[in-house]
Image (cartoon, rainbow, N blue to C red; front, side):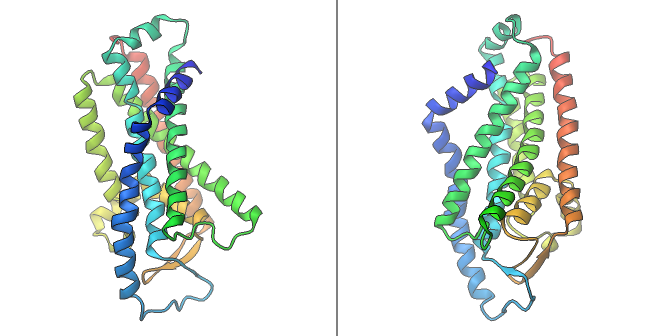
Length: 274
């Protein structure tokens, strides 16, 4: 766990890094979320919820689930790049020749990335409450604990896959700039080809297919199931998620994490130069 504690100490001491990591999702909530919520509320003011039993939520609540997913996505993909910095500055050679097993490098980096992602996601959710989100609304104390547990489960499994992917890229790509470019190339398509900001029903068929193959989509499905409701109504659309749908999304994320784990382990085993 030495790698884990080293990364977490660096994270705790670097407040500028924490601020910069949070400023983007906060700006999304403040600038995009508030303006879109106002416009959507006006547009659908004459379209009352006619779906009996469905929870009605504002767009800010709908979008915040997507911004939480974006926060985890960006944090995990970039956290794995700590390995790249260790390689670039020669620290990885010292770690490899030390008694620490190579598996501990992957494990420590992964756990630290997940911890940072969960901390930042929690801050985004709490900030969302200030702006009027309705997460865990109307639940009992027991219900809130169960819902938080469900969100945590999806967040951890989703983060695992992303951290393994990022670690594999960091190990196999020698140049730091190339590695950063690959991560940047991945993040935006994954974010926009998902249900983070808009319903999948509004997408053309090719983007809809891409969205269903996108792990971010499946995380957000779980996030909304536990955080909002399995049956809710927002900006003119009725959303329902069955238990089967939920298990399919969780299974997809678990499969994604498993495949990325195999790739990451193989990358660590086959990398000779550090």
